[in-house]
Image 1 (cartoon, one colour):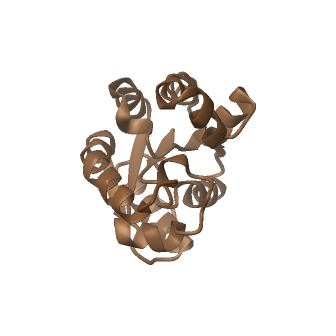
Image 2 (cartoon, rainbow, N blue to C red):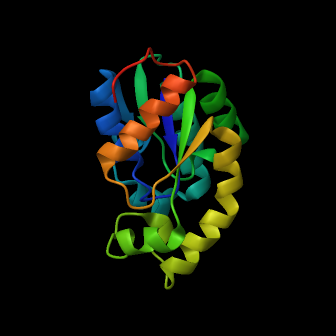
Length: 175
């Protein structure tokens, strides 16, 4: 199992889909699984039920998904907020932190209305605050960190594959 963690907009879903194709593994996005389970968007659920209840469902879904061996998993940006999630992710697979600068994320996300935690008056400050709070948690959970910067998705996937090969997770391949 390979899990991707990082801030909203860091590329977890996009990179995860490409990585799963390259490795011939199934792909799952925990946020999509949650939306299927709750029957509405995460944003709507946040508004009606609150973040705490959402995090309860997120923990249940992550517990289930992290027990799937041949899977590339894209996690929600806040998946590392609960210790049990960090433990499950780290112990049950290999975790890659896609580290993105908050200013770069703001450029990518400034017109995105789907992310509930960014629906605030000053989303850049919110991203900087999220980074300050979550970066140590992502690092604690991850087996390695990939700086997303501006490389293409294909380059990021190659970087991840090289790291997985170095860890002995994958047999040597030509990335």
